[in-house]
Length: 562
RNA sequence: GGCCCCAUAGUCUAGCGGUCAGGACGUUGCCCUCUCAAGGCAGUAACACGGGUUCAAAUCCCGUUGGGGCUACCA
Image 1 (cartoon, rainbow, N blue to C red):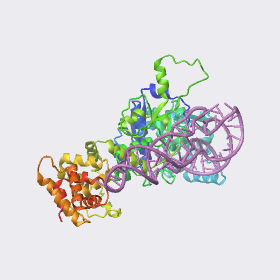
Image 2 (image 1 turned 30 degrees about the horizontal axis):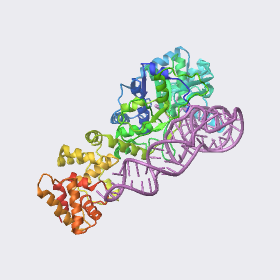
Image 3 (image 1 turned 90 degrees about the horizontal axis):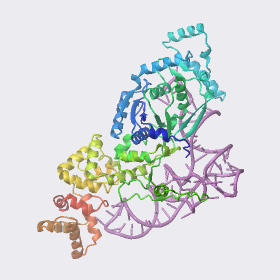
Image 4 (image 1 turned 45 degrees about the vertical axis):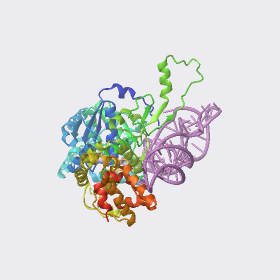
């Protein structure tokens, strides 16, 4: 990766950091768009800047309010906060103003070409295997020709479109320093005079976008790599207006398993899918942040991270200049820095979005595309479930998932491998949570969720288990009548004993099982297996001892009674 | 076709001229265990190819191949 530019000064010393996320409401927010929003958000947080949300809705035909609302609600679902909000459809005056400036400077001209004419010349270029570039015909029209053509267009209810006169800028090449790609250059003559304002009086993306960026004081444009080829046009516009252009960072794109770009119609790209599967918003963001990107934590930094896992110890050998004997280290601090700087850690799992922002470095974004991996997402989600407290998890479920109204239970049938009779097949998440809270109380629910979150990888799995095991009144089949009867009898005894030291806890249940095994010459594994079968209807799952205790004697006994 | 971007294991990546090519996901085996996970341990697998430059190249340069993006009066 060659980030051969030094933007450090720009990034760190400029306290006017302003970035923007500018989706067009022509579809729902997809996973790639979310990643762009995230990178902007992290960059803003890291540099104490502002994040602006701008709805790029200049294309009236394709833009829909429905999509705009959906994008905004998704951004909120992910807790990405923005400081300012704009819609391009409400900023026509601004574009008009800048267009006028351009006109005064003589950088624009009217184009009377019709769509058909343009199409013909384009087809011609393709047939000749030459690049299509607008021929600039209308630049050389005289006044009477213009008036004739103007009338013709007016008859069709159109006005001339406005193009930027590239040659007038007198440049051969446009080049820019991209934070992630380094120097990128384009030939101006290959760009062609592009349209700023259409014949039906709309402003084009390439114009409106950069005008807004200038007008809103955007310092850094962080967007997808697919915009690289728009960049020279936008820079040219900046030059024509005599403004300096923002700093660009074109981040790599996300691809599906097939190597194809994650597109809006792709179900893999659809955020609904991940919500429905029960991935936490923070985990999705965490995953998105580490793919096609690396977080480096210097060893001497404070480790906020939770102690146990993620011991990514990686030692880079210090590069010591042996040739230079005089390369003295003058004080202890320098020595410490030299030694420590070479010890870095790749950090993957974060405990908060703010922590992610703390270590975020746009310069480390990779310049090549990445294939989306649901396996890794699941892994990240699992880690998040593990380190989130049960209370927090429950509140996230209530806040984020209950509203979605997903019905998981009806999925069971199609998932086949579980064949149990669930009480309420149409229950949705809020039904399950409400029901569980009623049944076990707040504290009881916390205990159960605390248990489940360490056993399962997604919210969906947790909800399913909560419903199928902890809420089901179903009496599941036993496979051994005798064992079942013994279990009933012995469990009943624990309870009836009534003394303080024989509560229905893990030890008591375990002892009871051991006793049954000893006294009745039963295989201990069979007893466990039978208990599991009776209580959950399944042959595998988390510790049945814990499940039994969490269920409580009053729910276990009826299930054991034949 | 043209322009631009990119190339380390199945996937995400570290690497900035001298490394046993490091880590993570996945996968395989073992341990743990009431089963499934989790966890612990171990294994698996990569510098696209060809030329240079250099004492020395994954790393720098050129070419080839491959992948991707853009190529609109869409954004």
